Length: 417
Image (cartoon, rainbow, N blue to C red; front, side):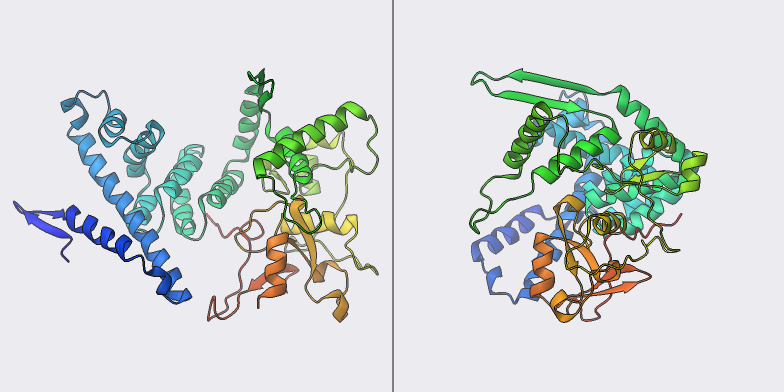
């Protein structure tokens, strides 16, 4: 089936042929007949086609903007034209307009998007990250982030962008913190049914403490082996109420650790106020704010090796100790399984060599895994190996015939300027 046509010397997409082809696929509804590996390949190809379609739409939108098409139809700008004529949401129209405006300044990102390697969402994440960098680093940041973007989802790509910022502009982290603290605000009001609506914006470090605390309290709970029926939003609301109840009913909270926040930083950098600290979820922290926090915190000195790995503690016990859990949180940053973003509060300490098989409860035999990936490790043929004290995951051959070792981006960010 032809999907392009020549009209007046101009090659145009045969959009009717494309629509007919897609309609035929929907009518057939037979992708379930594919073998599993071919089904995944089909999904990947569809994703690439969707990305290329976004690139084609961006190109067409750019040309519409160049010929001031919005004025012809009585619209004040391109976003209003797209919203009014295509009947898309205003936020989507603005997103598409941003691609038109911002991609020309990011040649590597544009090339990756126009090759179908990354989505429009990836491109905007890169643009947002680069906007905050000094101009002399823009070209290199565009290159490294575009190179790594195809291996990450947009959320992890955002973290990679923050990492680049901490490397090339640590002073910018300090400015961001000051801006965020200045924007702090909270709002609450009663709905007509008497329920309370509450929203708040707080500074990054206070936000990190609240984030970790509420995630710990909102962990799914099973009752008599049954799955927690609550949605994540319901669990988070229940956690907020529980946190407020704790605060209102107890001054001293027995059994609740005071260290609700873990900040990792080189001791010399902390003393000299240089470089950047990081929380256990990768949030950058300026040295001044880290030092301020340390004035009212219990400091735990964990000795790290040359590769950044916490050195092993011997433990003659089956369960990881609180000290080991803290060290694992510093090392693994949460669930260590590649691609997982679950925080340390949602994880369990997994024995690589099982305890029943003689495996020790030591850091070089422990790794943090969320409940789901803990089951994956026990039920599938993944293998964990330690390289310089850091866990790497080797997939089974049916996932990757080459069985190339993988790491979570939080543990090993492959970015170099």
